[in-house]
Image (cartoon, rainbow, N blue to C red; front, side, top):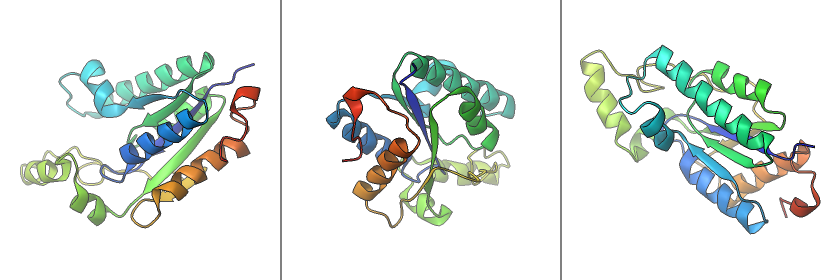
Length: 187
């Protein structure tokens, strides 16, 4: 029986995905799980070391993330995917290929994400947009929010502990972890 599962944290850049991923991983470790966090910026350094952010490159990049997540979950690992995944098709591909999967929409207004701008992406995007070549989701290319995510986290107004708890409850609700060693994940 497969016991692995994947959680995809999706949202605009600066929405709080990485912060939630870190808090969620910590909470899972406290409950005896050892999640693999697939962080898109780290993977991009290896998978696309000189990124162009073209549609074709994004298709390949997200297909690779889904493959890695599926391989890990097939071997029983819990996986957290921390990646914008600006197209629904990327996340739908994961849902189709990974038996135990939940999508978490880290919902945050664009203006709040732009004011946070932890990596300077929006500042860079505004500079590139003037040149007509911004590739940042939400600015230069569309971001397609999930239609029916299992969890919606309003990172601009929801406390982190509640966000983590909501995700953990969703895991229990979809029976992602029915093994004796990880009972009561949300407690």
